[in-house]
Amino acid sequence: MARGRLRVFLVLLLLFILACLSASSVQRLYYLFRLPFVWRKSSAYATISQERDHFDLTFSSFPANYSTEDAGLRPLIPAKLHHIHLGPNPPAQEWLTARADCLKHHDSWETFLWNDTNAPQFVEEHYPHLYDMWKSYPFMVQRVDALRYMALDKYGGAVLDFDLACKRSLEPLRRFEFVAPAAHPSGFSIGMMLASPNNTFVKSMIESLPIFNHIWPLLPYVTVMFSTGCHYASTVYTLQTNRSSLRILSGTSDNPSMHMLNGFVNTPLFRHLGSSSWHTKDARLILLLKNVELKLVFVAAVMIFGFFALLVWCIRSARHRLSTRDVESHLQSPLVKPLFKDT
Ligand SMILES: *[C@@H]1O[C@H](CO)[C@@H](O)[C@H](O)[C@H]1NC(C)=O
Ligand SMILES: *[C@@H]1O[C@H](CO)[C@@H](O)[C@H](O)[C@H]1NC(C)=O
Ligand SMILES: *[C@@H]1O[C@H](CO)[C@@H](O)[C@H](O)[C@H]1NC(C)=O
Image (cartoon, rainbow, N blue to C red; front, side, top):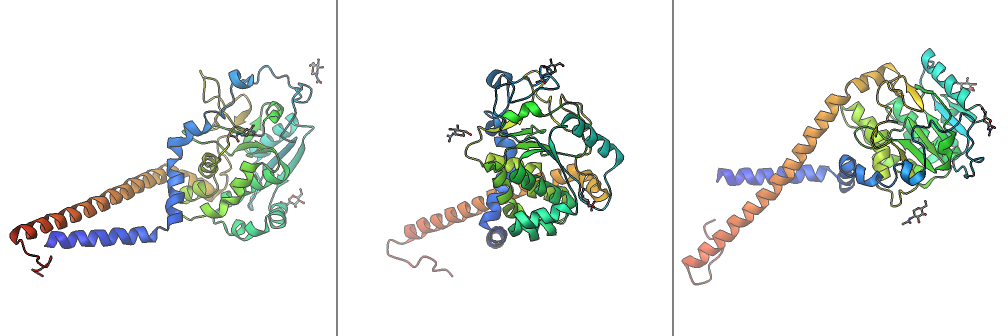
């Protein structure tokens, strides 16, 4: 009898938990958690390769003064270079030097520096319906991330993190419609993105911001990554129906991580100073929590799965008990008996 009550209690508890998670948040969680499992397949046809694109992934065969147009290709990405720096502290000297390197290698490009003066004006003017949400993001990094997508949508071009020191021009990539470097272990990095203006995917990353705008209590890293960061962008990528023009810059078959920007790396395009856009004090704290938080989220996912399994088990065993009681009461008397006579 006590076991029966326990089961009823468990079922009610599970139903309560399920009711707390609305259908849309279950769906959002599903899309976010499945990313590592579907990424490889999602990006398989989009990865830039020597064989398919006749593109030299080492960039060594492109001369410094290479021009997409002179090579007989139509540049789809405009020659525009965006950097974003928000927050009260001025950029560190090493980031200013890194940006100067990039400007030097793109001297004919139009350059943009988004800061606390022009960024809010831009968002309010062009994305008024998102302005309140953008302003109320709890973390500055989220405002930086959302602004990347908006600047690319409006102007197109390349948006680069402040800590990427260019080693050469991004010009050869202008033949594509959208390019971002592969990230470890899945998805792509938003530290470098190139896109044509009015790109469908970039628009989709902007339109999905309100849907994924969710604060994970006590988990600042997860909040940023799931609402505006790389994990968010890559999840929206997997939801696109046609990804054939959304190219991922990865590497050669013998060095697939050639262009990945994790940590202090030296790629054919950049020297990475290794701190990404996370350069304020609170952002560093957020980054410090990264591994702990990802483990917590994994444990939570396993527990949720366990709850579902338990729910199914409870329902099945309750059904089984009912049906055996049925059969027993019919066996005891051939006449019609009230089912739950003993209550
Ligand atoms: C690029 O530079 C090389 C020499 O360094 C020169 O021969 C070539 O004409 C230049 N090409 C363009 C498109 O300016
Ligand atoms: C932002 O940049 C503009 C133009 O470069 C400058 O006038 C303005 O003072 C800057 N604002 C801040 C907050 O740094
Ligand atoms: C996907 O988009 C490309 C161009 O971006 C187009 O050529 C192709 O036909 C599209 N495929 C489908 C199935 O719509």
